[in-house]
Image 1 (tube, rainbow, N blue to C red):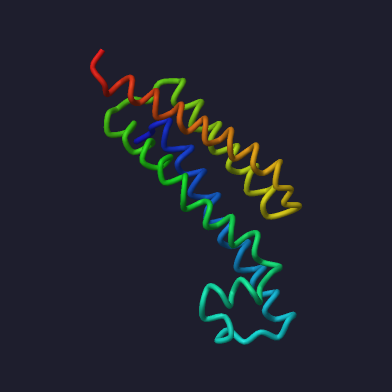
Image 2: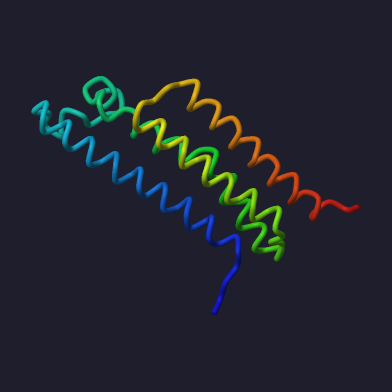
Length: 141
């Protein structure tokens, strides 16, 4: 069986993205139905943002999951390519996914900015540590 420890956090992050995507569309469709908004009325992003305020947090979080996590995905793929999957990298990867999950929960529920920001900031530091760890394997000693 093909098993690499770094694949599990990668799959968890992908699952988180699809979960938020589902949450977004359930929330958005419910809001459109309750407000009687025809889909054509929100054909542009500016119309979406001004009319669909209840589903704004999941929409923003979904976009967040397509920004910094790109560097996470790249780090995972690089670790697989280089065949570097030490316990520190695996721990950092799982920590990143857990923090991004907490960030999404905060963002999509009570949305307290400072709570969300602190989790985001720490997750970004974890991602930086992943890259520094990878750099230690790549750069000559």
